[in-house]
Image: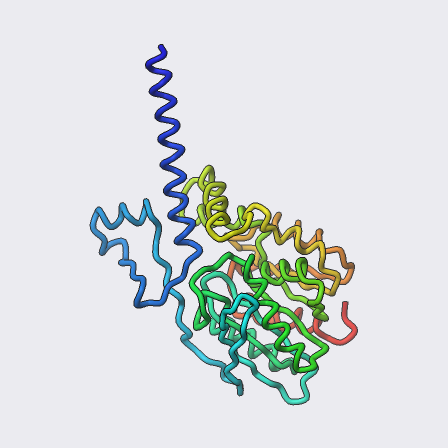
Length: 318
């Protein structure tokens, strides 16, 4: 009996160690983006059995998505310096007789060229626009991404750049990770005071974001979500279970527009509802896009997006 008990204990211990090693490798890869000449992954049908095994055990190398398009409106190339000494590449598009400036923040794995439709729309509303590449994305420095945690330094660099121009009407817009980064920045930095904020599809907690990714990959959510969240935070110097936009938004006291797509497979309705309910200001709106998923709401449902965003930005609106 003791012999079998020892075997069971050894097996459980081995399984625990094995799962943690696999999770640590995957967490590391998930939070890293590399230049195309430093990372290459074959398509599954091109892989040998050993290559597929390595991907399962050690994760995939993610390549920085290239800047594939540029603004169709007049713009300037800008370089921002963060407080932790990274250079962020950005586009600044001034508008004639501008009523303010919109600062734009893309999602995980994206770039500023992925938000060109929104950039043009805000410009047509009469706003100057600044769109950045987050650290480890596009043309910006670094290869480590913390899914909105340390990216608060990127948000602050962009905000301070525009504030230094004397701009008093600053609007922050972010999608997914960009929205989470905005919420964290406003919770952690008292000197960031935008006039209005637009959050599109922010996740409620990092752990829930990891769970959603595992569901998309058709992998069991637990214990992998807990392990990936733990190791991702440990490797990058923060308590990942405390990375909770649903709590960050409790510190936002400026007018907020929250937007979400009914078919979103990454951010649930309950997450969106919790975030919206936790925003303390009464000057808030929640708009649900019935035909959209986790994607550009403007490109999917343009008329609805333009109508709601224009109404929210209108002077005196709440």
